[in-house]
Image (cartoon, rainbow, N blue to C red; front, top):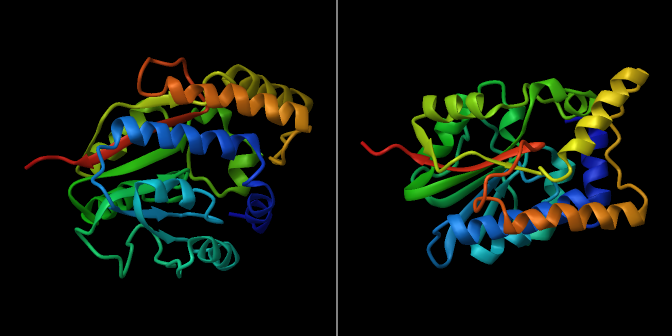
Length: 244
């Protein structure tokens, strides 16, 4: 990712509506769907500045990987332990057969060979282990945001399912999320194209709007995985190795 993306993440990951509400949605989803053992061993790959690590620590002992040096330093301070720099898709030096949960939250789209990356993650799971995957959806929503984040693609449910299957994994159902605000996001992308202004700035909006968006997005914690949602900005699932 461009340096500015990490700088914005460090500045806003504790206050921006998207980060704050998404952490709550993911935590509730893991409570309902994760089936994790007590004191699970957890690895977050591509942890950025480490803003998800306290949330994941509710479920067990957390380790992390981040390849950007500055973000890795912030994440290490938050974790209170060194964060690894092992890159995808190979994950060199990462113990195989060791983790109950691997979290890749808006990470797989950064990897050119997403199938190889998912396969390597599957090799690092214990029997019964799972991979928590979140990815951006809808290739037609491609924008300057994807460019500065060095994305290779945005996913449909079909393309994500295909990558998971080719990696020798199965999923527990592909869930839309960030659906309640999707019409606004889609309208913003379309309007930006019509104006010829494709803005990559994802700084928080005015505080009143930031609080409103957070409340709306957080409502999905009660919905994701329970009821089908309309198409959203992102797709969420849990994947695990196929039996046999």
